[in-house]
Amino acid sequence: MPEETKQELLELVKAAQTLIKDTERRGQKEAPLEKQTKPFSKDLLPVAEKLTLEEVRVQLGDCTRCKLHLHRTHLVFGVGNPKAELIFVGEGPGRDEDLQGEPFVGAAGKLLDDIIESIGLSRDEVYICNVVKCRPPNNRNPEPDEIETCQPFLFAQIACVAPKLICTLGKFAAQTLLKVETPISVLRGRFSQFKGIPVMPTYHPAYLLRNPSAKKEVWQDMKQVHAELCRLTGKNIPRKGR
Ligand code: SF4
Image (cartoon, rainbow, N blue to C red):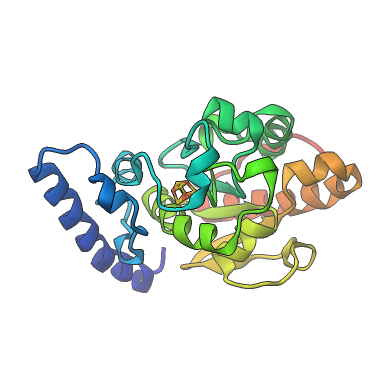
């Protein structure tokens, strides 16, 4: 992570620590409901050394900050290695994820597992989360106000894990991190950056289930992810041949 980014995050974490200390001083595990209903301040981005994913999860609480909470079964935070070198960011929970409380289960989850395994890693070795943590009704697209409200928690998760590389899945994850409105078909296949961390946008596994011919482009994208991950980590990660 570049020094400038690290300094920026170090300053921001002080505000987060103060809030957590205040909450603990009051003997509460989670922020009170009136605080939960307010947007999570963008100034509360933590850094990996100072704030844990568990603490970010506590801050999220039984979140009612946007209207997506109204229809959810489970809030789906994220899974995987809290110190992963690679993060996958999807759009939001679907039906299976909402029922099970875990991102990328069901058919799209199985395909993501295959994608992860193609670059020589397992689901336990990476971190997986979504832009919005609650299922949009009837699997509709997340709306701008919902993304805006939930995205600070995504940024906090990324800062906690401090990955070497991010792979976004689908349009909304790419556009949220890169702050662009460019179509995913144009964004995919080339690296951009989020706060100095390389980002490879690619298609969402659910899109691949509907459009299997696009898989070849995802495999090409994942070849680039694998090569860059090996370069950044200095590891020789054996790939599964494709
Ligand atoms: Fe809260 Fe995010 Fe769920 Fe909205 S989508 S209720 S901001 S956790």
